[in-house]
Length: 417
Image 1: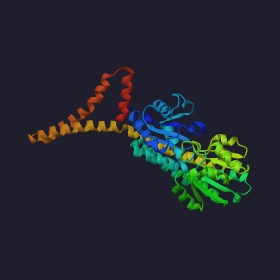
Image 2 (image 1 turned 90 degrees about the vertical axis):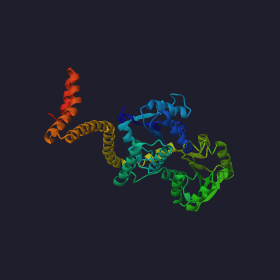
Image 3 (image 1 turned 90 degrees about the horizontal axis):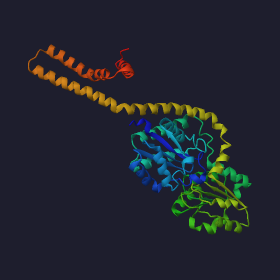
Image 4 (image 1 turned 60 degrees about the horizontal axis):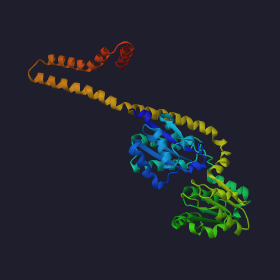
């Protein structure tokens, strides 16, 4: 079994699967370890899982992509073939290129966005702590971080990084003449909310509030932006006060149902609410969008707004791809060399055993008082005979086409041409 054929990436992303499928395939942090352990138990030697709002991908050192695909469907309670239309499987070199592109932000909804690199580092850490990160994946992740760094520092890919957060602010500005009179509510306290709060704060809104399940985290984030904080459970009584709601939590169930939004609209006498749901799975019931005065945008909607700003970075992508090509070549070379190590070790071991045997014989003869020149002659002949025996025998045991091929290989190996 060669390790070379056995690296692959398997998963789905915003290009291959709609949000409704992606949100069912999210691995929540607290269950990541058990999932990795399950894979290691019988399906692969090494594995790592990257799960974000735009993608769920498994990077695996093992032989059975089909078995992993079935496991993924089973794990997330799909029919056995229920995920197949959305999945891609990338074997060795394609997998390496893919990981490098993902790390560099070239495969993201928002070209060049820096968030993904942190998420990849998390994926590597999780695999390491679960004991599923071996030599191959460790090296793959380390190289991908180095490639991403090179792409960021030498190209303009991330320059105009129109993040989801910036897009959310731009959309809000289309609906409200000025954000100075608006009250903004952030639900969640993670990295994405932090980015959004930074962008919205720059517009100087009338009020900003952070709501989170644990008040402590809400307060910590709110302090940075001079915002208020509240617990999630106070939402029903407060929602109607806000013109703009941005939600991104790790909750597996919606936080704002259509009914709750409807009551808030009545209390607002139907002044519009602009809502951005950046969570996967979604925080706001999609049905809320059917209400007249609600403007609800999901991750996928924002991506379209974002894509309008991407031309700036098109030429930078070509540069980035060139960097990645070189690095993929180097990584594949490392994988190939690594594959031959056991063979080379065995070859040298065989030669060394012959050397030791002849040396011991020579030392015995010398101790017996034999003439040194004769002993050396016999030592060197014994060594040549031992080393040449196996290849000569192999050549004599074959015939026809096979013998010609072996003869050519021997001539190359011993540089006899």
